[in-house]
Length: 260
Image 1 (spheres, rainbow, N blue to C red):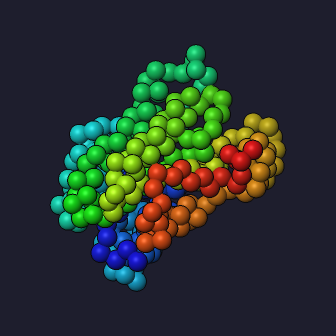
Image 2: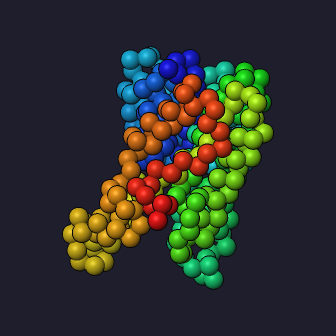
Image 3: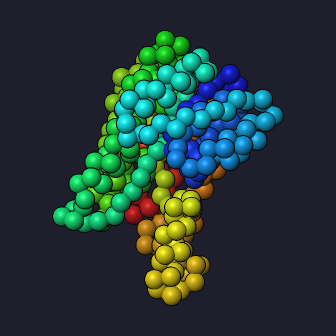
Protein backbone atom coordinates (compact mmCIF):
# COMPACT_ATOMS: atom_id res chain seq x y z
CA UNK A 1 0.00 0.00 0.00
CA UNK A 2 2.83 2.41 0.81
CA UNK A 3 5.37 1.32 -1.79
CA UNK A 4 7.31 4.33 -3.03
CA UNK A 5 6.46 6.38 0.08
CA UNK A 6 8.97 7.34 2.75
CA UNK A 7 8.22 7.65 6.47
CA UNK A 8 10.22 9.41 9.16
CA UNK A 9 9.52 7.98 12.62
CA UNK A 10 11.15 9.87 15.49
CA UNK A 11 12.14 8.04 18.65
CA UNK A 12 12.03 4.77 16.73
CA UNK A 13 14.97 2.69 17.94
CA UNK A 14 12.69 0.84 20.40
CA UNK A 15 9.17 0.64 21.80
CA UNK A 16 6.23 2.39 20.15
CA UNK A 17 8.28 4.11 17.46
CA UNK A 18 9.95 0.88 16.39
CA UNK A 19 6.57 -0.90 16.24
CA UNK A 20 5.13 1.83 14.03
CA UNK A 21 8.21 1.83 11.79
CA UNK A 22 7.92 -1.94 11.33
CA UNK A 23 4.22 -1.72 10.48
CA UNK A 24 4.83 0.98 7.85
CA UNK A 25 7.78 -0.96 6.43
CA UNK A 26 5.58 -4.05 6.11
CA UNK A 27 3.35 -1.95 3.80
CA UNK A 28 6.33 -1.08 1.60
CA UNK A 29 7.36 2.33 2.95
CA UNK A 30 11.01 3.34 3.09
CA UNK A 31 11.89 4.29 6.67
CA UNK A 32 14.07 6.96 8.24
CA UNK A 33 14.69 6.05 11.87
CA UNK A 34 15.72 8.38 14.69
CA UNK A 35 16.50 7.94 18.37
CA UNK A 36 19.15 7.36 21.00
CA UNK A 37 18.91 3.55 21.19
CA UNK A 38 20.63 0.79 19.21
CA UNK A 39 20.17 2.07 15.68
CA UNK A 40 21.77 -0.91 13.95
CA UNK A 41 19.45 -3.42 15.64
CA UNK A 42 16.43 -1.23 14.86
CA UNK A 43 17.48 -0.88 11.21
CA UNK A 44 17.80 -4.65 10.91
CA UNK A 45 14.35 -5.25 12.42
CA UNK A 46 12.67 -2.67 10.18
CA UNK A 47 14.48 -3.94 7.08
CA UNK A 48 13.27 -7.46 7.91
CA UNK A 49 9.68 -6.19 8.23
CA UNK A 50 9.86 -4.66 4.76
CA UNK A 51 12.05 -7.30 3.13
CA UNK A 52 9.31 -8.50 0.76
CA UNK A 53 9.07 -4.99 -0.70
CA UNK A 54 12.80 -4.26 -0.96
CA UNK A 55 12.52 -1.14 1.17
CA UNK A 56 15.38 1.20 2.12
CA UNK A 57 16.06 1.99 5.77
CA UNK A 58 18.29 4.75 7.08
CA UNK A 59 18.95 6.47 10.39
CA UNK A 60 19.60 10.00 11.62
CA UNK A 61 20.60 10.63 15.22
CA UNK A 62 19.15 14.14 15.59
CA UNK A 63 18.63 15.28 19.18
CA UNK A 64 14.92 16.15 19.05
CA UNK A 65 15.36 18.92 21.63
CA UNK A 66 17.52 20.91 19.20
CA UNK A 67 15.82 22.64 16.24
CA UNK A 68 19.05 22.86 14.23
CA UNK A 69 19.54 19.09 14.44
CA UNK A 70 15.90 18.52 13.45
CA UNK A 71 16.44 20.76 10.41
CA UNK A 72 19.55 18.74 9.49
CA UNK A 73 17.58 15.48 9.80
CA UNK A 74 14.73 16.74 7.62
CA UNK A 75 17.21 17.93 4.98
CA UNK A 76 18.97 14.55 5.12
CA UNK A 77 15.64 12.74 4.65
CA UNK A 78 14.70 14.85 1.65
CA UNK A 79 18.12 14.37 0.06
CA UNK A 80 18.23 10.63 0.77
CA UNK A 81 14.68 9.73 -0.28
CA UNK A 82 13.46 12.67 -2.36
CA UNK A 83 10.61 13.54 -0.02
CA UNK A 84 9.24 12.57 3.39
CA UNK A 85 5.64 11.53 2.69
CA UNK A 86 4.81 10.40 6.21
CA UNK A 87 6.05 11.93 9.46
CA UNK A 88 5.38 10.13 12.73
CA UNK A 89 6.21 12.35 15.71
CA UNK A 90 6.85 9.86 18.47
CA UNK A 91 9.95 11.05 20.36
CA UNK A 92 9.22 11.61 24.03
CA UNK A 93 10.62 11.60 27.54
CA UNK A 94 9.01 11.54 30.98
CA UNK A 95 9.71 12.86 34.48
CA UNK A 96 7.47 12.45 37.51
CA UNK A 97 7.20 15.07 40.27
CA UNK A 98 4.61 17.37 41.82
CA UNK A 99 4.29 20.83 40.26
CA UNK A 100 6.02 22.67 43.10
CA UNK A 101 8.95 20.24 43.01
CA UNK A 102 9.21 19.84 39.23
CA UNK A 103 12.76 20.66 38.06
CA UNK A 104 12.64 23.57 35.63
CA UNK A 105 15.21 21.96 33.33
CA UNK A 106 13.07 18.79 33.15
CA UNK A 107 10.00 20.88 32.26
CA UNK A 108 11.92 22.59 29.47
CA UNK A 109 13.32 19.31 28.13
CA UNK A 110 9.94 17.55 28.11
CA UNK A 111 8.25 20.45 26.31
CA UNK A 112 11.10 20.60 23.79
CA UNK A 113 11.17 16.89 22.95
CA UNK A 114 7.49 15.96 23.41
CA UNK A 115 5.91 19.04 21.80
CA UNK A 116 8.25 21.49 20.08
CA UNK A 117 10.00 18.77 18.08
CA UNK A 118 6.68 17.84 16.45
CA UNK A 119 6.15 21.47 15.47
CA UNK A 120 9.59 21.61 13.85
CA UNK A 121 9.25 18.37 11.86
CA UNK A 122 5.73 19.37 10.78
CA UNK A 123 6.63 22.87 9.60
CA UNK A 124 9.57 21.48 7.64
CA UNK A 125 7.66 18.54 6.11
CA UNK A 126 4.51 20.41 5.05
CA UNK A 127 5.75 22.34 1.98
CA UNK A 128 6.77 19.17 0.07
CA UNK A 129 3.59 17.35 1.17
CA UNK A 130 1.45 20.28 0.05
CA UNK A 131 3.24 20.43 -3.29
CA UNK A 132 2.63 16.70 -3.84
CA UNK A 133 -0.94 17.03 -2.50
CA UNK A 134 -0.36 13.94 -0.34
CA UNK A 135 1.05 13.57 3.14
CA UNK A 136 0.42 12.02 6.51
CA UNK A 137 1.45 13.58 9.80
CA UNK A 138 0.81 11.26 12.72
CA UNK A 139 1.47 12.59 16.20
CA UNK A 140 1.89 10.04 18.96
CA UNK A 141 0.22 11.82 21.85
CA UNK A 142 -1.08 9.82 24.81
CA UNK A 143 -4.25 9.30 26.77
CA UNK A 144 -2.61 12.13 28.75
CA UNK A 145 -3.43 14.35 25.79
CA UNK A 146 -7.08 13.83 26.83
CA UNK A 147 -6.96 13.43 30.62
CA UNK A 148 -4.59 14.29 33.45
CA UNK A 149 -2.66 12.31 36.05
CA UNK A 150 -0.88 13.58 39.14
CA UNK A 151 2.85 14.29 39.07
CA UNK A 152 2.99 14.45 35.27
CA UNK A 153 2.47 18.17 34.70
CA UNK A 154 5.01 18.62 31.89
CA UNK A 155 4.06 15.40 30.10
CA UNK A 156 0.31 16.10 30.30
CA UNK A 157 0.81 19.71 29.19
CA UNK A 158 2.96 18.61 26.24
CA UNK A 159 0.55 15.87 25.17
CA UNK A 160 -2.46 18.20 25.39
CA UNK A 161 -0.38 20.57 23.25
CA UNK A 162 0.26 17.83 20.70
CA UNK A 163 -3.50 17.25 20.38
CA UNK A 164 -4.00 20.98 19.80
CA UNK A 165 -1.19 21.12 17.22
CA UNK A 166 -2.79 18.12 15.48
CA UNK A 167 -6.14 19.91 15.16
CA UNK A 168 -4.64 23.13 13.80
CA UNK A 169 -2.41 21.30 11.30
CA UNK A 170 -5.41 19.29 10.11
CA UNK A 171 -7.58 22.38 9.71
CA UNK A 172 -4.96 24.34 7.82
CA UNK A 173 -4.66 21.47 5.31
CA UNK A 174 -8.30 20.37 5.29
CA UNK A 175 -8.85 20.96 1.56
CA UNK A 176 -5.63 19.18 0.55
CA UNK A 177 -4.41 15.59 0.43
CA UNK A 178 -2.40 16.18 3.60
CA UNK A 179 -3.90 14.87 6.84
CA UNK A 180 -2.82 15.13 10.45
CA UNK A 181 -4.05 12.92 13.28
CA UNK A 182 -2.97 11.89 16.76
CA UNK A 183 -2.71 8.48 18.40
CA UNK A 184 -3.38 8.48 22.15
CA UNK A 185 -2.17 5.23 23.77
CA UNK A 186 -2.78 4.18 27.34
CA UNK A 187 -0.29 1.78 28.93
CA UNK A 188 1.94 0.22 26.29
CA UNK A 189 4.31 -2.56 27.24
CA UNK A 190 7.63 -1.05 26.20
CA UNK A 191 11.02 -1.53 27.90
CA UNK A 192 10.38 1.76 29.74
CA UNK A 193 7.05 0.58 31.18
CA UNK A 194 8.49 -2.84 32.02
CA UNK A 195 11.04 -1.04 34.20
CA UNK A 196 8.17 0.67 36.05
CA UNK A 197 6.49 -2.69 36.59
CA UNK A 198 9.73 -4.27 37.84
CA UNK A 199 10.41 -1.33 40.16
CA UNK A 200 6.90 -1.57 41.62
CA UNK A 201 7.30 -5.31 42.15
CA UNK A 202 10.63 -4.82 43.90
CA UNK A 203 9.44 -1.93 46.06
CA UNK A 204 6.37 -3.83 47.29
CA UNK A 205 7.98 -7.29 47.29
CA UNK A 206 5.27 -8.66 45.00
CA UNK A 207 5.39 -10.67 41.77
CA UNK A 208 5.76 -9.05 38.38
CA UNK A 209 2.29 -10.36 37.52
CA UNK A 210 0.78 -8.73 40.62
CA UNK A 211 2.59 -5.47 39.90
CA UNK A 212 1.29 -5.52 36.32
CA UNK A 213 -2.30 -6.04 37.50
CA UNK A 214 -1.90 -3.23 40.01
CA UNK A 215 -0.53 -0.83 37.39
CA UNK A 216 -3.27 -1.61 34.85
CA UNK A 217 -6.02 -1.74 37.47
CA UNK A 218 -5.43 1.88 38.48
CA UNK A 219 -6.25 3.28 35.05
CA UNK A 220 -7.01 0.78 32.28
CA UNK A 221 -10.36 -1.08 32.48
CA UNK A 222 -9.36 -3.66 29.87
CA UNK A 223 -6.57 -4.85 32.19
CA UNK A 224 -4.31 -5.35 29.19
CA UNK A 225 -1.48 -3.45 27.59
CA UNK A 226 -1.72 -1.99 24.12
CA UNK A 227 1.13 -3.28 21.94
CA UNK A 228 3.45 -1.28 19.67
CA UNK A 229 2.22 -3.52 16.84
CA UNK A 230 -1.40 -2.47 17.42
CA UNK A 231 -0.40 1.17 17.38
CA UNK A 232 1.53 0.50 14.17
CA UNK A 233 -1.59 -0.89 12.53
CA UNK A 234 -3.51 2.25 13.50
CA UNK A 235 -0.77 4.35 11.90
CA UNK A 236 -1.10 2.22 8.75
CA UNK A 237 -4.84 2.92 8.72
CA UNK A 238 -4.20 6.68 8.96
CA UNK A 239 -1.96 6.33 5.88
CA UNK A 240 -4.58 4.41 3.89
CA UNK A 241 -7.12 5.75 1.40
CA UNK A 242 -9.84 4.76 3.88
CA UNK A 243 -8.55 7.54 6.15
CA UNK A 244 -8.49 10.27 3.49
CA UNK A 245 -11.14 12.21 5.41
CA UNK A 246 -9.99 11.37 8.93
CA UNK A 247 -8.62 14.74 9.97
CA UNK A 248 -7.64 16.21 13.31
CA UNK A 249 -8.70 13.29 15.48
CA UNK A 250 -7.13 12.25 18.79
CA UNK A 251 -7.71 8.51 18.58
CA UNK A 252 -7.28 6.85 21.94
CA UNK A 253 -6.20 3.22 22.10
CA UNK A 254 -6.31 2.99 25.87
CA UNK A 255 -8.43 0.03 26.98
CA UNK A 256 -11.22 2.33 28.10
CA UNK A 257 -9.06 4.66 30.24
CA UNK A 258 -10.56 7.91 28.90
CA UNK A 259 -14.10 6.46 28.81
CA UNK A 260 -14.33 6.44 32.62
